[in-house]
Image (cartoon, rainbow, N blue to C red):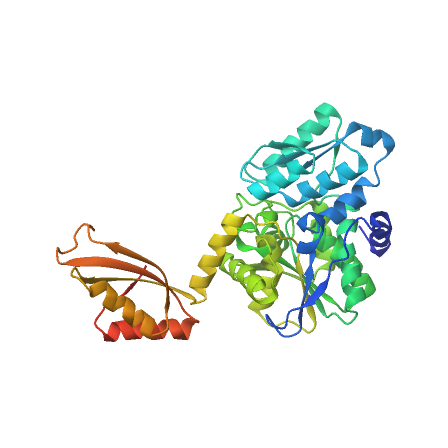
Length: 394
């Protein structure tokens, strides 16, 4: 099992090749909360730590053969970057649904990119086949001591910056990051709590802990694509069982809300996996000070826009309403005037006179209104209801 000495050795191997990312106060999110901003790391993720740690152990003969890796995106970019800097040929297998942002970033770093399978597991099977066929060295995303030790350097920096840290919240995909963090943190500060966080649609480690053995999920589906692993490895499962205090699960809505609040209150862009630990920090009280690892920031802009919009709806900041108004001049203006009087900011309006079943003298109107929060939204609803409008949520 990886230990503190291994993590320190990885720190020496990595040297100045990775950034010492900042530890940022986040009292605006929760009292005593700090964020380890690995989304600001090279390639936008902690994964580059493990890639440098593992690939600097390659012999000259292994470097000449080249490397292969399977990844939904962040490990892919880490391996591609290290391969470019060490002069190694890299082939990366990514799932067919991998985010375009991560796919193109990996190609720009010089790796050959293939797409195979719909999840990490399908991509990994292809990577194994390529390793056998061509003699490539397989750089596993999490089931490797060198990779785990490299990820554990996150904990060395956290405890150097915050020696009295009481708890570290760590996202779990395959378990390499939390394995390395727990190995270093527990050795340096035995009283510290290390808690893993999984997305509800990919809770393989939590299910494995319940069963006391490795469990393979039938499928995974989550906006936190970096956590979409059907099964951890025996190596990472054993480390979690031995060193991690708890593994909790967060829902999709909680992850999306955390992404929104990180942008709005801390000015950090996090992908779903990167926001999972923050979602856990927001879900319940934790001992102070607690650090949430923001593990990555490589989010597709289109998805980010959708998450922000949905988050604003859930937070009561966007109000979607549908009602019927008389189909005569001035009716729509009257409705919009009432919204304005209540301080609502109109974002969009849809006016539908042709809806099937609608009386000829009426029209449907759907409004998207920006409000200051749930109480303000309730005020807008109440005013319109008092004026006789029959409202439904759109």
